Image (cartoon, rainbow, N blue to C red; front, side, top):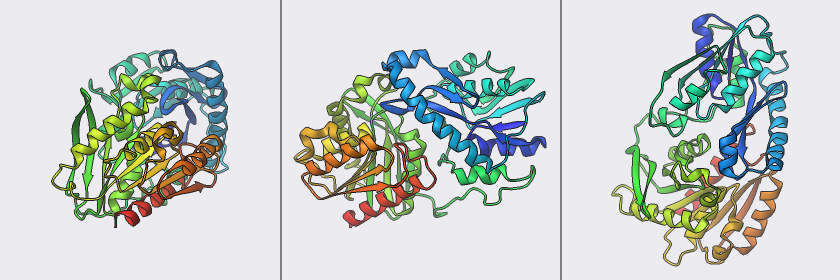
Amino acid sequence: MVLGLPRGGVPVGHEVARALGAPLDVIVVRKLGVPFQPELAMGAIGEGGVRILNDEVVRAAGVKPSEVVSVERAERAELDRRARRYRDGRAPLSLRGRTALIVDDGIATGSTARAACLVARAQGASRVVLAAPVAPRRSVAELADAADEVVILAIPTDFYAVGQFYSEFEATSDKEVVSLLGCRVGEGAAGGREVSGSTDPPLRDHDVEVRAGGVKLAGHLSVPEVCIGTVIFVHGSGSSRHSPRNRFVAGALNESGLGTLLFDLLTPDEELDRRFVFDIELLAGRLEAVTGWLEIQPEVGELPLGYFGASTGAAAALWAAGQADSTVRAVVSRGGRGDLAAPRLSAVRAPTLLIVGGRDSLVLELNRETEQQLGGPSDLVIVPGATHLFEEPGALEEVARLAGDWFLRHFR
């Protein structure tokens, strides 16, 4: 039985199942993200009440037991929703007495994969094999006791995130997962993976490095052939350029004729420390250095410039935009903590769009307060039914549409 880890592991698992002539199902687990940095995993949960915690990350990030309980409660509700959604009313296939081949698109910390192995064993699998295209050496070693066999094609020493090893790493949609699971083995998905965009290669699309405040920041610059302006993605951690959400939105902006620069504000060591993630002045200073670097690049230096910020990165974007010499033309905040830039909000003159999920109640109230304090034109848009990470069907697509419209309007 091939079990794809949703969502990204299902397209990979579908190909494995087709090659082996084996049935395909999902094994539903959810990452437990650090409260102030949801993309950093501190553990995972799975069906059947399984919970795995990475004590090292919990300790380093200073997460309180009450915060763990709160995160788990929310993720457990989402886990149950996805299990119902993915199987589209079908009962899960029985694992009893079978070999469970668990497939993902890559392994980072290994928390999710470990939880999946435990879930498979709890459901009666006689043997558990874990397989993925890429994983760091440390995670592979730590997973040796979770599965009977671990199959990894590439184990690079320079590993920061799964996305760095993919040329295309768009977020897999719930619709695609349901479609692939509904196929008989050996047949293509009913809808298939939707690939949009021009076939013309971009003018520039490669990794870059920017020195800021004594550290080297890694980034990725994409400039379409006909470029109207450039958007810098601002994230409060080191995951910006490999974040599937950021890459998805950046791809949509590229298709609209906008260049994008995704870069990491923090080094891998710094992103584990809550002090760095919430040091808005530090993050804004690094953003200003990256902005200065971008403004001297020949392809985009004379074009309009915008910031797209998420979480504490949005606070850094607004802080930098509030500088007297700022040249930023427009700002978009996705689930942003603009309240953390309160001392500079009145000085922000660039038109600012605040996008918040309708179910992200705390951040929604903070954004309402932020809008009242901004010194320039602004708009607050609520995406109905969306939570903080905009994981719900169609939510991220709406974020990309809103952001693209905002930048194009104010760049022109």
